[in-house]
Image (cartoon, rainbow, N blue to C red; front, side, top):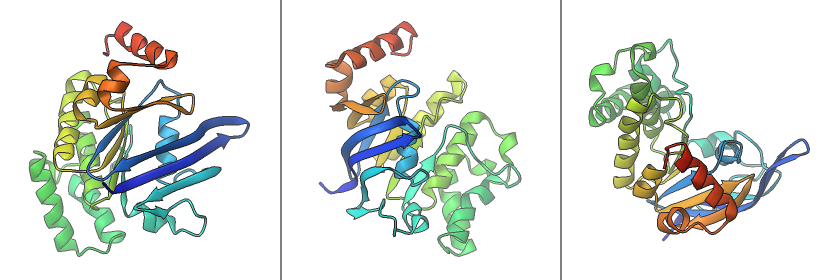
Length: 248
């Protein structure tokens, strides 16, 4: 199976603090990988490095076999093949839902306006938000805003979708509608790397799970292996803390 993403001995520091240490893993096409770990474990930094929002200090990141961390690489070209959805929705408040979704296809990917609008409406209809096309973000619920943010990333037809704790800013009632959207994308074969605290979701959707602890990959395998048969004390303690908080 072809790997869409490969990381080889990736390291990242901020000043004297090492936040990622010798990170190596691969994500095959049409699979979903869950990235789990406590706050401060390096999950968001790792996603930002993959999206070239942060420069790594050592190692390699490859997208479809091409090293994208080479300094000569055009980062804008790379990001055309990546979709990223953040904890905060990051929608433009002064633009409608439709304008938010079509902006990048038109401006960055040079898709015609008519085609971009047609594709946007198709995505909105698919995810039950067609009637919100001309609304502004502040007229939507948090769950609807996050789903629009996901649709905006899908509109550029990315090879890889990066999701950074996309439910963490949501009321518990709204979490399920966003997770359902991500689950539907998995069924469609979208290749995804998902940082999440939703362990039940990771069990159902992820093909593989990565446990990150203080910038180190401690465990990597199937949900059954990682979540059902924790080997390291760090993962055992992490899962125990989630159980105590009623999140597992």
